[in-house]
Length: 208
Image (cartoon, rainbow, N blue to C red; front, side):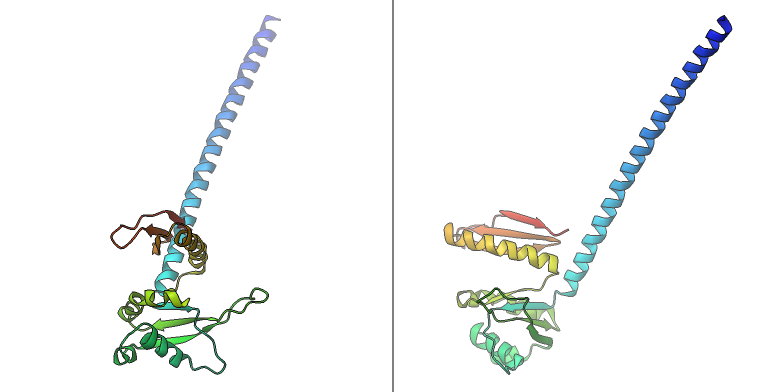
């Protein structure tokens, strides 16, 4: 009887030992899986960021122009030339010197019932400096309801559109100047009181 009792005790201790080892093994496996998931998530986020930055770089020579009246049978090169010279005040000879790779209207998505905004124009410059020359004068058409902005990946455009609405409310309600900038994969909204004030970040949207 004593031997049987001892055997049972040994068996119970062995079971407890095996159970403890199994628990430790499961914990270890769970930790490994969690660590693996974290590592995969980081790599996916890094890959997504790289893809967005790559597309952003590919679009860096482009500008988007919103709000220019759209006419039937228009010649897009004349529309652009008129914008550069008459609206932005760029000298004709300088505007003519900009080598442009391509320009066309972008068909809008289904418009809101009862409204029809003119399709945006996308312009791709051959030289980045020429594009920046146009962007530096873009503020001159703000009061004409024309917007000239950098072309960005779709996910960043959506974020910018959200910030545009916020910026509009800030300008109307708080009487502040606003600026939206792309920093890496982030879109940043910065308001200021006037030209003597500094720009302050009030909204930062990550696009990855």
